[in-house]
Length: 226
Figure 1: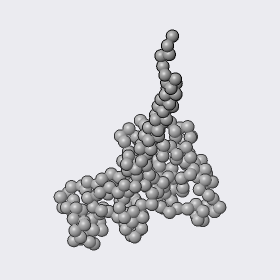
Figure 2 (figure 1 turned 90 degrees about the vertical axis):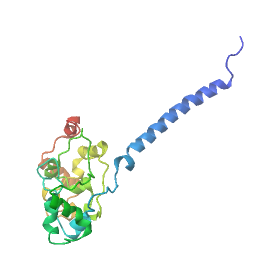
Figure 3 (figure 1 turned 60 degrees about the vertical axis):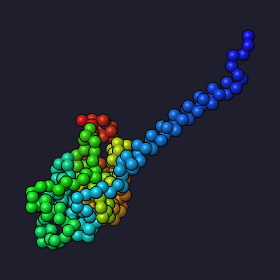
């Protein structure tokens, strides 16, 4: 019986099989990287705003506390965006004719809120409560970064699920005393109220003190997806 296939067919078959495997793995790796890229997460991306508000100037320069503008962060799921009257508390007395602040003055006169662009925005299927995190000792800086060094606001973290789970698996890495939650540069090693403590040793104590859920509960799907 004559040979139906050329002897090289076996080699071609092997190359095709392994080539398909490597191609599939390569495409999967590219998709994995694309999903985590700043193009998708917008991490580090400065979003245009109707007024170029500088956290660096207001927080570091003037020493304004986070809660002055984000009034509901301690008792609501939403941190709150400042109403125009908050801005006008100061700017009715200073920089009253600055062209940069014309949108603020227009908002005040027309009783129309400023349309700020959300920088940290989670999908609708994700439940996140600011007050829970704040009252359990999670500092603003853990999610938002050192905003006092941001002349314009950008997204410091990816906010992807795997990033959230890193803290839910080991919350002791970020926990701090409640009275230090709004301190963007808190360092346990320099805290005279907790001498000799490292972040991990202090975090483990606070985890028990604040009665955090168990690791299994914190990783349960229903904790964030309701």
